[in-house]
Picture 1: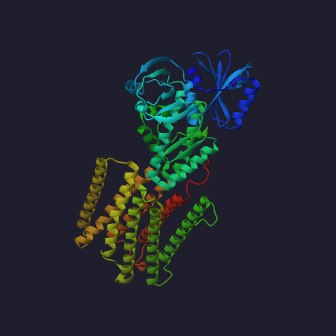
Picture 2: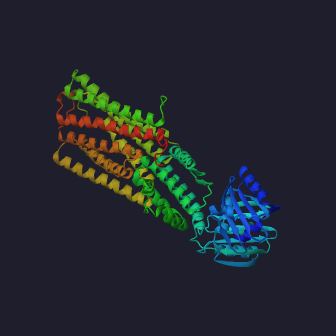
Picture 3: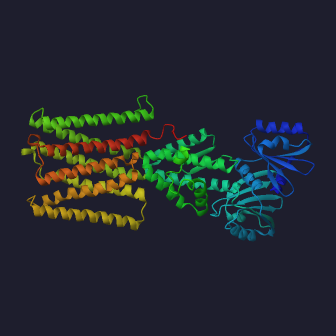
Amino acid sequence: MPVFSTLIPETHNNASPGFVDILIRTQREELFTGLMQLRYPSNESLVFTFVDGTEQNLYRCHENTTELVPRLAWSQTLGHSEAAVGLLKLSLEATRFMRVAYEAPVVRTEQMKLNTQELLGHAGKWVLEPEPGIVHVRTGEVDRIYLFADRSNLILEELSFVDGKVQFSISDSSFGRTLPEAEHQVVRYISNREHAVWREYELRLAFNPLVRMLMKRFSELAGRGLTERLCGHLSAWAREGGWNITISSNGAVNRQYFDTLEAAVNAYTDILRCFQSEVMPAVGPRLVEIMFRETLMKLPPNFRDILSQYIYGQYGLGSAALIAQKGGT
Amino acid sequence: MRFGWGARTTSNRLMQLAIITAVGLIAAYSVIYFLEPFSSFTNTLLADGLTVMSSVFSAVSATMIWKIYDKTDAPRRVWGFFAFGLWLWVMGELTWSYGNLTLPDGEVPIGVPDAFWIIAYYFLGQALLSQYQILVRPTQGELTSRVTWSVLFLCASFALIFSVLRWLEVSSSVVDTLVNAFYPAGDLTLALAAIWLTRNFQGGALGRPWIGLLVFAFSDLMYAWLQLSGAYAWSLDQGNLVSGFSDIVYFSAYLVLGIGSLSQWLFLKYGLRSPSKAR
């Protein structure tokens, strides 16, 4: 959403194309993670997302729309006139958050002024709605953005912009209790759950409890020692695959920036395939299948749906074949 | 204890060593049983000594599994009961061997060894129950129902076998008949539980000891049947082919149980360490 570009503070005015190039190179060298905005006199702006010094996505923001620029067109897209450059350093989690904010399509917008109690009441309703949304709350000089996608209300990601600094946190629909008693300007952007950016987001949310429950079950069957060894092995496996995902008995610490849904699906499927291939010699195929099926059934319905669609669904519900089939391909 | 080898090599070599030793011991036991190369007493001493040794091997292997688990691990409870049950069987074998070597004709009456063997069934049952709870995570109602059905099955088969034995007048005393009827009933119950566990683990390393228990339960059933039918030979010089086969299977069953447990211990100690071939 273009409106979020206003939250990026401008650091350089009238930067020539050559200087913009130097700035981009500097961010690469400094392993910058965050957003870089280039605003042109034509009122068009471009926003790069960087993760560890590598450009991940480029967005072209018009007055009301945002467009994802294909990588091959990046060099042609960068303007040849002077630009105002803004840099916003973010954590990886915040960068992933902003990717959703930029890419999620807006179906409808609602604007309102609410006091804290009213905001709490609305948030309780928004979390249950079938379509996801992005809620922008402005209180005085403080901006807060929330991603309403998890219908089980376990996770509500929040990004606060205070004095040019950004803080990422996780809350739930009762987040309003932490806000000051004041009038809040609220804009709610209602989106479409079927869009790939939301599917990737929800899959990420669901993957962690899936792994945590699988590990817990394996620990019950095989003991803590073997489980810890398995976690170490899976983490090494993920690292070798180029994914910044660490597996522990408490679940997955996912610090990977996936720029497409397919990349995320492939990574999660590969990790589960590795889990399966390691665990099967210990407990046998039947228990592995039961383990996958029972774990899925215990997850909240929204997590179950997304995992069924992208991980389990392709291979049949009881997923001993989950991933063996994938391995064969 | 890695001898400078990698984890997988150590595990494979220790397993191979255990299997080769077991095959050698079975061969030695068979030679002693059928060829009787030494005096009658020495042959019996060696045969009984090997049986005690194999029972110690199975109990030590189960104890090693119990020890490798963390105190908070659910399977530790399974292996605590299982190892204790197997140590009671070791005591049963020891006292039986003593009787077999010292009593006239080697015929051991119902007594101390049976007390050890029978009490052991309780602990083995507890081990199976704990494993069932870990696998199925039943509700209290389901657990009560499953235990009730198992006890009813045990009682019914025990009552049936007892009635048949009384009708056949196999033993003169009621106590003897009660004890003799208990073994087949207990073995059958253990065997059914072991079949269920083996089916669930489907060849997984953590299910191998249950295959050993299954083999043991069947070998003990065969022994009980021979003893009740009067075909069992109490000393080697009275031995016959069926009796010999039963004794060899019984001896081997302890080794299978021990190797199954050792295999699980090796897996817990060295398993999951080499890079997966999945990628």
